[in-house]
Image 1: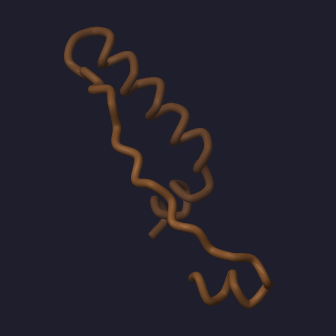
Image 2 (image 1 turned 30 degrees about the vertical axis):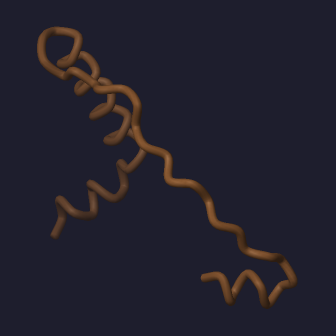
Length: 56
């Protein structure tokens, strides 16, 4: 990847690894709400992909 970038005259730099600092608790009613809303969003965003997979 770096050689591709450098071929355009841009110098590649090393980025620091960022670790997650928060824990997400999906237990209980609040966790169910999060899972449901994220599932709906994924289904809405990738609707055509899921339709094609269902037809296979």
